[in-house]
Image (cartoon, rainbow, N blue to C red; front, side, top):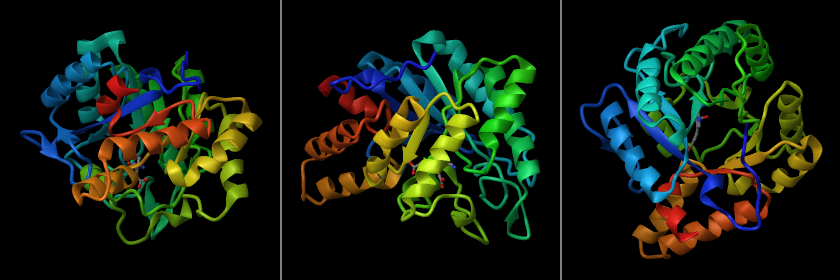
Length: 302
Ligand code: PBG
């Protein structure tokens, strides 16, 4: 089912293009720092995906931003509407991966449901379960939980078993508490309020914990794993792969991509060369797949 596999050469089948859909928009809006990436309406997302498919992109990861924010998210109707329209239009011409998190839906921008600055795991899992169920009903091919809460993969696996879903889980299994997520949080409107994400994301200095986190998600039933950010985490990829035997990829995050854009905008480097070099390094480190904001621009030049 999961076809991501490291080959000698990076190919289009190893790359995943992010797509943002924002309910508040009447027309697409450029995302600051991310080159030609836009936050989309459902319609403009469809046009972009058509063009991307013609360029050779097959894999997409979706970030859906609904207007309504909820204390305990249980209404994922805008997600359902957008995802099902996309899947109906493109069918198996795309692999539809859906980022599964609460940060674009909660009132305080946290990836889980919190009370008095503390995450409530039980409520969070329940809400993520409703989300994943809805996304699968809408046609998601892969569910990608990025919340980083303890036991999410296990919770989703048992829910899928009950519901007889075969949908694979792409776990954001080693995701660090990073300052490289800035441009994304603007687009996803997901900056956390009141407290930061250090209670659930991993400390950058702790290699053991990071490896352990991926192994744990593998043991809980994830079909593939991921390190995030990309360049700052590449040292972990081979070890995770060797220990889990699962496809392991990297998310070259918004701040990494934006920094390359800024170098080239300020005439301090050539964008295409910088970009290719960064992807090559992630690939060299063993990544079976790379989520990257320039997938659509690079597929023809690999
Ligand atoms: C949601 C999520 C984030 C990213 C992907 N999924 C933000 C965060 O964890 O704060 C970041 C991606 C990027 O910066 O490109 N939890």
